[in-house]
Image 1: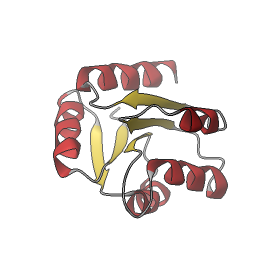
Image 2: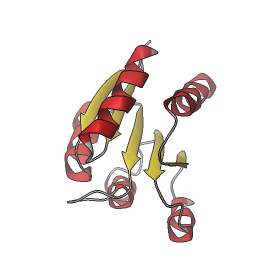
Image 3: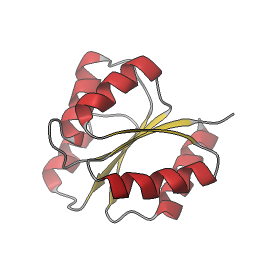
Image 4: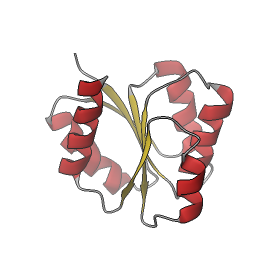
Length: 123
């Protein structure tokens, strides 16, 4: 069974690199340019995992996670926040979210694939 991953980043080049790497190993990929579009896709398409940048216009990755937590609290899926800065404020807040992890940018596609596969194997 192919797992559906939603990739969210406002940088098209970053999205493309991650999309190609994840598709290569068999994941089904959808993308969104910001948190607003991502939230619509999460509620409509129910992806199995979310990989999102933190720093984006319109709605940041942390705002997206808060909206998921507040509006669809029963939604339990893997969330990986990509950040170029692993700030303490994000890590403190993230303890409230199940299945949420941080990966620092630039992210290794190989490392991301390995973490997603590990999550789905334990599921």
